[in-house]
Length: 97
Image (cartoon, rainbow, N blue to C red; front, top):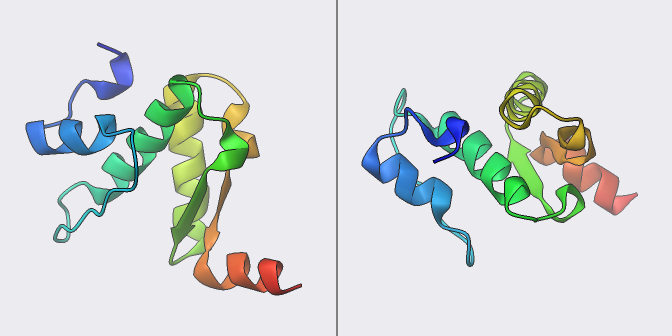
């Protein structure tokens, strides 16, 4: 098992390793949603999904920066720099331009 997968509970592991198709994650505060999302992105990239094919939307710039930083640490490479992670506002403003 990859190091970044250790420390996940059974439900988190199930969500992270689900690769085929979309997945909705509904969970309460402090349940590890950000951990699951960042680990899922790292897992997708570790399994050959190009960073340019991943879009992650957050509510704050701080959360986006933190997610990118976590993914870089998990993968140990610079590929996370190619991820498009941003706020709903910044992403859609860019699309509209």
